[in-house]
Length: 319
Image (spheres, rainbow, N blue to C red):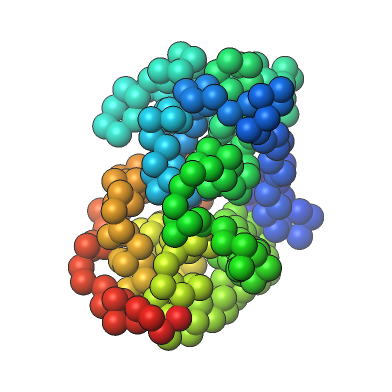
């Protein structure tokens, strides 16, 4: 008789085998008000990320798109994580923490909240002067980077246009639930029923997004907004890790003509490709999730070409 599957994160598992993600513990905001606890000051804030993590990846893309590389420093963690959490080590594409000299990200959590209980997650926006975490929610960090950190940015770079606020929030929530977090709900499920429920919801939403992108270049028309980038961060990882490692294998993104072209289109926008590191992505998922891949074998494939022509420019002006 086979034993029940072991959960990768037992503390985030329901009684019926569903993965229930922990809440983000730090939700303060940087403010333009000088007297605020975290006032806007050039060079005061630092971003901790992993290139493997889709949540952190989104903040890195927004930092790039808003031209904040000189204003907000960044430290990249080793993609291979153990029981000590994210580490800062010298190797290809990652290195030591130059802001505080942390060996492990958990040090930032423990300094900010002694006795912190929970997983030490990325991204983290760190206040170097106060020496504490401001925020570890990718949604909040993207909002801050788009607004308070870039108050004079051109209107065409606004990732949260006021005219789209309600519709954008609704679609972002659906993409989060069924796609961004949906792949994790499928991959970290510890019951067959929970896995199948998550997979069906995931592909139902991917099918709807494929249809939505038939007549428009991006989700809301001729230019991408934050919702596009949250979807991109899952799509760019999908065929490499979620399809096999998380068993989300009804279809590949390569099997969706519109989503595949859309993925390539976003990847080829200026500055985006340099934020994508498939080596980090594959090593993190296959070598870190030991309950899912106990052998630790890293697959050679798949062969992916995000630089191939996408053909999406034909849809300009049709959204």
